[in-house]
Image (cartoon, rainbow, N blue to C red; front, top):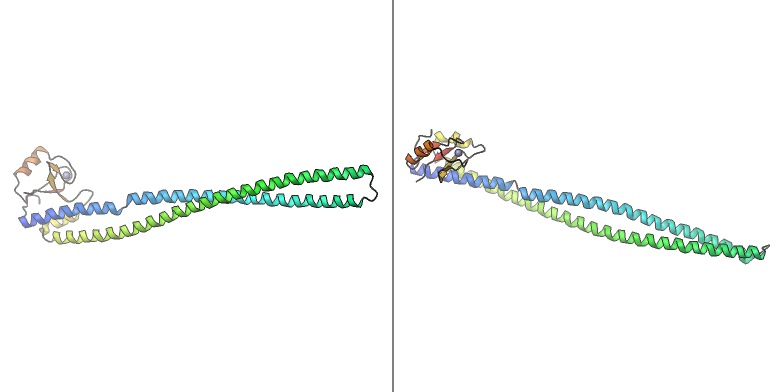
Length: 243
Ligand SMILES: [Zn+2]
């Protein structure tokens, strides 16, 4: 196989086929869109964390609002007790002055209690307000991350489409170049594995695996005329001698 000699036109077609193969591999690598995928994964992780934080803040906020309502209810209870006690005091029926002083003390104690509870209510409301604002900030951040994710996803889709189109174009070009290369080489060229099926020698090294040509192979290569071919003894790729 490798001792076959290509005409100038065939060698030119194979050389172009090799170059388009390298172009194809670049496109196929690009089509994986590794960086975009990594960025998308990072955004998904960030979004998940923000959603967890939102859940946590919403629970804290609900507790704080409940604490404020509880404080309001218990302040109402104590106010009712004040009213009842005041009614008894104002009525005064059958009460000694000691009783009256006792009731006045009770009212004063209840009013102090109301002040404390109202203070707690204000604290709970302020805390709830601050949590609500943190929750709003976190929600805005989560939405921003989600929207960046959607943009990136759309970019990835359109890039994918573009690259698929380019890959199909290059494959078409290679298929038509293959027609200008002897049929005896086709099955070998089509069986491309991890290394390109054919390559040229660059600075004494195989263009497919990068190995330096061995002394003997290097000699044979130098003795070939343009369009001559031999196999790389490193990776087995078909090496084309170019002028
Ligand atoms: Zn090689």
